[in-house]
Length: 395
Image 1 (cartoon, rainbow, N blue to C red):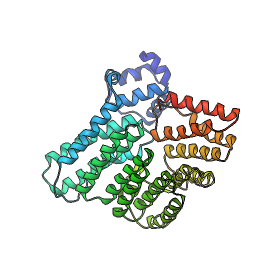
Image 2: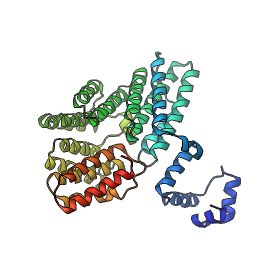
Image 3: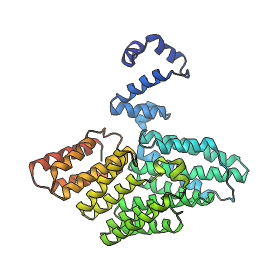
Image 4: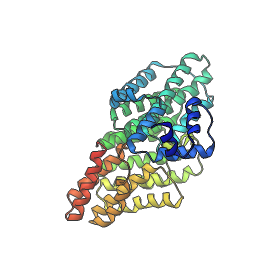
């Protein structure tokens, strides 16, 4: 756009836009920043994605040549080799700048472009690796290794959402090695839990359960074990064991009580993607029952997840809310209620399909399969809309 057209679109004077060109690092007034935020929010999905990539340091010309899976795997391989090459005895200390970036990425997980968040984490990881190479103080190395492990864990989770499971697995393993170097059992358990999640999404319930049990063997009491019980429940769901699913969810109740009195750094301090509260737990329980084809039990938990969130009792990320909405629709479909299912699907189908969250796409794909086996014109029309959304998202 010309400066005049852009000024008109945003609602500022042409002189103001000219000043931004001349002084790109000038500080904006809050009201002006809010106007620009609104302008970005109203862009079409493709423009928003290009903007996010540009802010992350990716040029438009580079973007045209960028193969997403290539750089995800390259970053994962770098992290994996780097983690293998390090070994040292180090002690604890805090590096506030690195931790602030970790918190920013974790807490903004669902509000920022996942591609931009991955690049942010990757850039901070390169900085942290450089710091580890240049410091000779063991007390500093412990915190640097912990930050590297946390950044690798976030990159693993982002890579999973971006559909690169191989990269996610490599990054999760790298994070586990750094957790060992830093002596951080909570992060070690978290990354094993992520590996278990990758396993049950791929349909390997036995490996998922082995990883979840290995994580439970080292996980601190409270929130870490509470999360892992729900991951184990989903593994049992993949294996078709309803009795074991119910048993492990009952055990999770005891871990939930302990979480009220136990403080975990990842859950309570960093939060965001590392946190695991009541709404997220209920959503996981519902997904486990869905895998077993138990619509009534699934519906009770998925609706509980939504109630927790919207009541403010246990707010969670938009991604978890959308996932719980899709699972609620699936639970209704298992009971033959297409009308109620559509009520919960429509808000998700109105979302931009770019960028796609891989787990959300997987849930919608399962719903599409249910709709294909549900008789009636309404189910057929809804199934067509779901497949169209998935097609636009390249799932």
